[in-house]
Amino acid sequence: MAVVSVGEHDQLHVLVVDDHAIVREGVAQLVARELPGCRVTSACSLDEADALLGVHRDCGLVILDLHLPRLAHPLEGLRRLRARNPLLAVLVLSGDEDTALALQALREGAAGFVPKSSRTAVLAGALQIVIAGDCYVPPSLMQVQGSAGDPLAALTPRQRDVLRQLIDGKANKEIAR
Image (cartoon, rainbow, N blue to C red):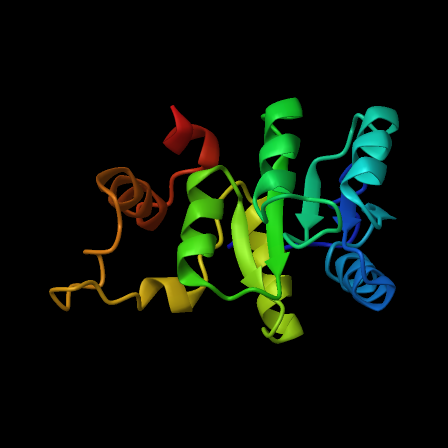
């Protein structure tokens, strides 16, 4: 994990997308504290996030709630953001702790998955990992038990490959290639 120094993130722009104001504001404050010098904006819907991303083309990280209003599926927001901005890092912050959903979000390009039940230190650590170009995988996903008792049995071959590359310290771009 990279050490963050004051002023290091002067060019980083983070967008927090959550339909609950108290969550949005709290996450924005945490981001501002953990990434000194970065710019933080927020949106309460995917439509508002799309509009802000159109204006703020320098946005490098989105922290996205999966359960936004008017979305047919929890992963729809992630899919739309990734389709329109394939190089944009999207860190998922979700109240849903379903392992299958978390794995699917990571499979579909999320830069990490943080359950909302996590302590703020976990989100702070995930931010550091993601801005360093790596993927944050919560410990709960590392403990997934497959039918044969093998924790990796529940993962697809590609997921196992990605996990091996993460363990080797490769960046998201290297893994994607």
